Image (cartoon, rainbow, N blue to C red):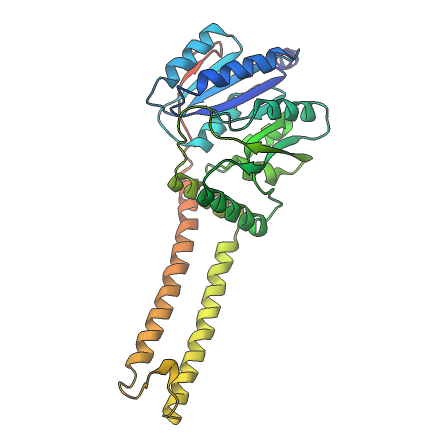
Length: 330
């Protein structure tokens, strides 16, 4: 009976929004979400996760939660990053259908409403946004395209192209993702890995409505590496291929150098190896083999770093304050 009562008290919809220094965009987002959800008869909750902001984001979350019982706040103890903030939001949401959206409103509320309708109708377990066009610099668009092309080909499971974290999931999908044991989490990768029935919803991604993006090229590179290392062993296989290719090339060069000893008129690379016997061949081989070793060590180091993080078993983020959950903590 207690379990049934708890389930009946759960809202139909949950929406998770990670926030980092979003004092300009947050009021716009909250107003649009309130308008969109007020137009439906579904019960709902809005979870605003402050990822260690150093502006007025946390204060605004407290104000919104005080004025609207549908709004809840989660204040993290410091800046842990976008993906850990999403993981904390997933762990605290109670809705039967859970949406994820960024605070910058580059993912339109209208598309979010459409995705909720798809999942609630039973047509799918996951509806995710597919960015047909993004209003971003050419270099950034090219980098995104390269990442999705590579991860789609290298991942051990189907990985939709141009699909970020913007999505709506059923409760069983959320529970499945929460139960996954890894600490280095990437929502879009885990979401595609769990399977179930998934539908992509195409849309055009505009610029931010306010403020500035906090995802610089370094953060995007780290996110891409997390996705590649966490969901593909292709780089490890690449290291093996580099080793075999390097060995073959070294053998070929050795044959060329040996041939030069018997045919002095043959000048490989336009250089007479007999001028300084052994020096050129040694230099070339050392450079070739050394570069291959460093590449392979770098790839192995990335995977060892992930293994070390998982062995430590630390949580992906720590919560400092819960707001609007009925048992507020500080």
